[in-house]
Length: 149
Picture 1 (cartoon, rainbow, N blue to C red):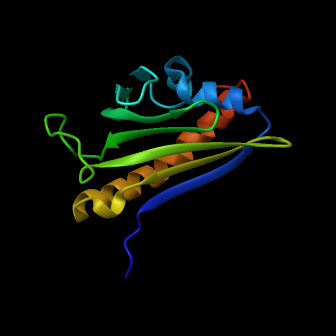
Picture 2: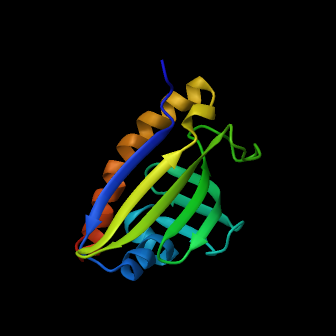
């Protein structure tokens, strides 16, 4: 039986890629829909920190910054202590792909690396993050529409 390695969501947005790019990369905007407190510099290799008032904190690292086309970060899997160095065996990679389409932007969100996690971490991370992306992307859509996230 194959191990699931990816959570993937694809949505078409009636916004230009530069608008979507700002909403997914500017920490001030990201804090409006994804996490309550977000800090990082938009530079590959830069540390990142996200915190949710109800769910705790996670740290990570910015991996890819290709303006208006691709943004990626690596973050610790659920349950991995901050004191443990982040590796491919205790983290996943989140990548946003933006493609211009006639109606606006196609956004693909891909989170990979679950197959390399130890089984207990993998099961928890898949369950929580699969649900989490549904919630966060609904908040993202509300944010882009100008409503409460």
